[in-house]
Length: 391
Image (cartoon, rainbow, N blue to C red):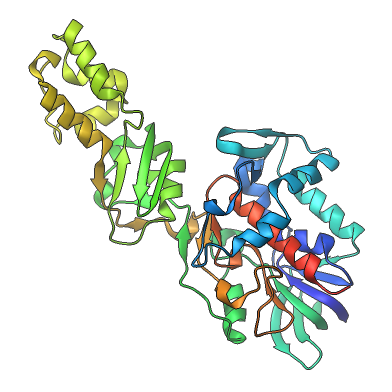
């Protein structure tokens, strides 16, 4: 079998590339269905992009790498595409866009576009061998029906990272990169909950609170969720991408800095109120009970000086703690790190030293914030390749 381009991976990036790439296209994936990570994303409604998508929201050893692809296929371009296919959508907080009905609409749209473009999709198909030839590449495909030898002018790797292995994620992209001596940066789980030893937060499991969570150079103000294993919620997932093992994180449970003034005002008029009772009116009761001994929250408001109230509030605005790890790839939404961008063209995503070999999507050392940014990188990097391939 001869094709112009063999795309390995039928996820967001792979299908998007197949929908627009010229020539004869074959897409393969070892899964039984295409676009499974799309299907489960956003609670089944797919947070497909973000209104505020821009280079500042992406982590990479080369922060400038994303600029070209994001500028040439923007969030507005993808919004126009789903509008053309009559997929209703809505905006949630912080510019996050979701399907009104189902993430399956995005998958159906991409499959339709692939068919219109003449691309062939083969599922439950794996690569047994891949090597370069004088004219391009040869690959041995293994499917339930048997083996197929394929020659291709180009190979596009769109198999993602290691996150959510139950959905079939593997390190295949990194294996291919090493085979062709393409450098790979260190990888680790990102957008992932923190864990703590000794079931530290079990008494608080299920408590959610607006917060500002800081880790390394990252600082995010969204919801924080205490779990049986540790900390989760949007603010924590965002901060996890900036965290390194052994480092402390900071929780600000009073991000609007209103607690001190509120306590002083209440003390002035209702000094006999119990301190913990008033704090429980401003913050979750279980949280105050949890911190009662640690912060020595005893006495009435009238017993608390301005200095003492300031001390309590300062602790709640900078609660330092050190996670013992994260929940790992099992629950991580994305993989941080990947194919070294120094080895790729930012305009075409082609390997500079391996002609005809391309990497797109999550496999590359580009990781977006939570909230649709990683899907936009999939669309943008895929279009960069589709537009660069020879007709």
